[in-house]
Image 1 (cartoon, rainbow over the protein chains, first blue to last red):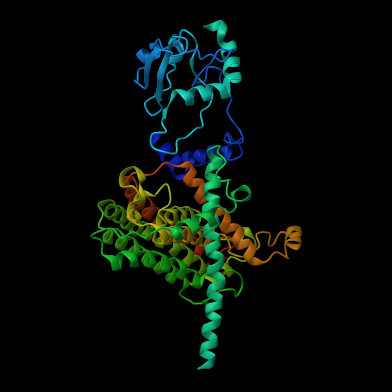
Image 2 (cartoon, rainbow over the protein chains, first blue to last red):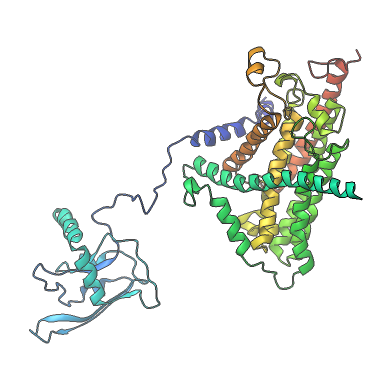
Length: 163
Length: 346
């Protein structure tokens, strides 16, 4: 009997028609595509994108060259040289470089930083044009920080009570 | 001499009149396919080139034309370049006997159906030669799969068309359509329903379309028989595949759905208000539905396994068609329904 049933359902193409109905219904469903440059998906304030080095409001760079980020970085993407600054003798970095090809965007550097200097911004659509551009230098990182400081500060404020 | 030249010119013009729109239709079938499959997957499909992506196929064509044709080392160059031509020529040639309306046909021949069968099967040579001349194992495997598949389904397809032949009593495509005159219940899709389904599925298999697209199974053999082709030589394969799709759709409309006949024929009110519609519009509408169905199938079903395809073709389709041919013979001899009235002997 069950064999007969199977024969009947396969000759009436029952399962195939059922499948066609599913896709036929989806033809009219709402489309979920996000048209990227014009539309964007919402981002969390904790979004981990391009890195930046921040400054204090008086313009002094935050980084004190403690090298915690370099130590914690699981991909060994951060390279730091540190020493006393010529003008006032405070401990500063002389070199702060992130290899963006090595970076895995885990955010450990940001978490480890005692002075909230290295952060990850919401910027996620960037590119490199020349070989070697993937290594962001201290000047570049500071420039990124200056550019997005408002957004960075706002995001840190929102997240402050959970840290 | 002069009238021969004039004849030649007229035939050339008519051919151009068929092939020009056909190539355009092929281009926009690819667009429709990407759009419809996109919609069925809740995506938008191509929408960047031109308004709503309408220029996408044009951009694709330009891209393919500008690409280099790479002949792989160790390939048989002559055959390698001949194969796409061998593949596309029959799929264009088959259009010669397609009637688009009453008397609107390039070659009104009495062996139209036989000619169609011959043309659709000769394309397999293009596939085999492409696979062999490429000097690539993927291409060879793909072409062998394609060849065995086309040959297997040819039989079921031929049997299904024998049904049409029995029902209409002629091989002239125009007369096959005229035999279905008198409203949509006169069309052959009712008495030949199982043959219609089998013809359609075999047609999908013949054109190597999903779910029967083993010859180009991406997961195992990259792109099958045309894996080594690039640029315009690839475009020819692509063009031929879609021209075949359109051909199968049009043929299904002709054989089983009354071709250019008005579906409202014989319905008192509707017949009057649809009288002005030209026959070719009905044909294109019907063929368009089947083309959509083909794309719909692709969006729905996963690919068959090789042995399943062979089982379906040999152990299901061929017996079913043979049985239905018997049934059909009895129906004709009994003069059943509006289709075979007056042909009964009892």
